Image (spheres, helix red, strand yellow):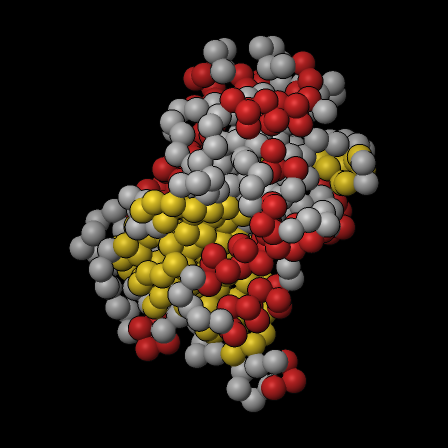
Length: 395
């Protein structure tokens, strides 16, 4: 109830931007709460991006980087990097990841002179440690930072290989086109990301195995499984109050503090990583926060991409999700669009979608191509804005 009230008050305090439609400095466009980049070119083909904001402060952050993947720009590896960072409890962690993870990845890639699962894993770890240091330095003045976290989905395309790393419940889905299998509708969806959400039975089993001294490590509250009854995701960057016991004390607000002590982290920042050798039938990949997947299946998403023009396809996926969200509430899409951020969160989550197409001839050619850097955007507010304290970070 407090969360709903705070969101409503914040929506009233901040002026609406729903009538604005302008060119964004990053090459995208803003239409009310929807930001989009209809088309662009990366090293290995085309891409499309879109973000719709629901929270008062956008908690989803995203980026596409293409060209050199090394801090030594004249050295390998080359390729395309995608990041979708779905924050919870506030935007601070997802913003931090957006500013640091890719830089860490380039540093480790330069050291190894190649891209690898190990490079990506080290980048996740360095980003986690950096945010932990930030929280530690500011804990006495801004204890709320300890309760903010973010899911983190990364895809890297380099040297004919697709790497997918995920911590949390965002999702990467590969669209594969098989001309010889019309029974599948020609296009097939293959999920490449492992999800870490307590609603999944295997995740609950993993948590119980890791924490035998905590029989309440997962609790069913209001018909939703959550770690310690607090948060749905079992892996994230941030959420340090559930990882380090030294933050489970004052000046952290009492409602966030756990009664039972813990000696090892209750959540993990280690990503699950899939390595996939790209084949000619691999046509595109959809990387999106769980806000999209709440409203459509993997197969529905790849069929939409496959049967519509590439230009604006990410925006189309977002709009299809919004129409489904409106339908679930028995309202029209046109009426949903009129609801401002903050209040909008009661109807759907922030949604980020990046669609990247693969040109097979370029994927195998080790092409370098021009450098491209795009970050998803929302309603412009100061980057040091701190989200109002509402509830514990829960995806």
